[in-house]
Length: 256
Image 1: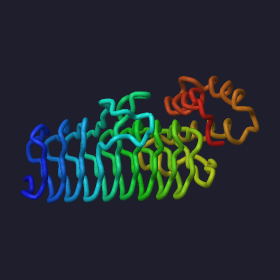
Image 2: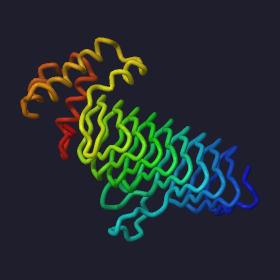
Image 3: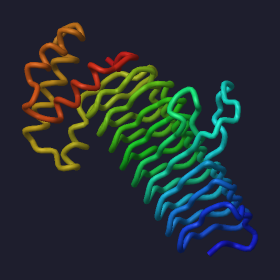
């Protein structure tokens, strides 16, 4: 399953039924789980752990040093879960000692061409990144978020679960869960109601989220007062609790 024209360091740990295409280079301190397919002309450096049944297409650079001038060769790492699709020309860098020490991509993510995931980013599960999405360092992307083509995410921002970012959005503040946002700079455009319905959210939960959205974005209240109103809804729906939690914990402020 390893093409004769590939270069695989003898210290790399390669699982069962792993395929490595021609002219790919697998460095030491790399672990690749069973059933993963690595296309041609892929470079994977370590420390890096890649899980099972991933598909990594040609010309990707995986596990390279972070693009951070503070990096001095510390043994940081990249962690990739299972069943991810990583398309052409993507770059995923290792972490830095100044933050987490790792960059992490979860499971079942769909990463399209020319995506950059920088050092110390944490991406959850079941996300979709369209072509040319760029994450700066220290970014958090929660489960089921969808990022349209050419979105730019500023360092230390969080994009909440089940949110939808329109193409070309410039994100410089946190995006609360369940929202649709777009623009440069990004602005809120309502609840991602259609996405929530497709993922099986109950009508009652969506209604409660609409109410929470209106409190934060349509009531004219300060954010502090809006959080006080959201606190009165605590415990009724976990979706509303998560919405309020990210807003309350935000250090960069939220898209508003």
